[in-house]
Image (cartoon, rainbow, N blue to C red; front, side, top):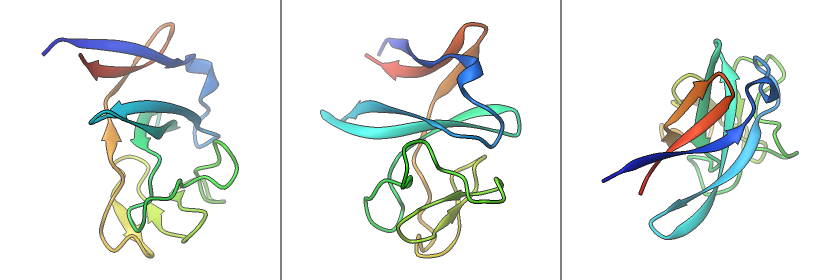
Length: 116
């Protein structure tokens, strides 16, 4: 299967522990919400779906971090996730983490790696 890349945003659109950028992906023929954030200097992307029930994490668009800027938080349930891995750290996610998406950061932007 061939792999392509799709521009999500410019590099400067992501600040360490700051607002994320929302985008959409198609998986199994269904369009799904996703997001990319910067944590520990690395761009990381996940499906925008809580591990507890399929609701989007951000209450306000792009607001994925908790107040400490150390964890991703579900605004609906308060579930906490590790921004580096998407692993459930506590709350109602009951051990179910976020679904990671492959991204690469290049000089001109952050790209989603897609199978075609």
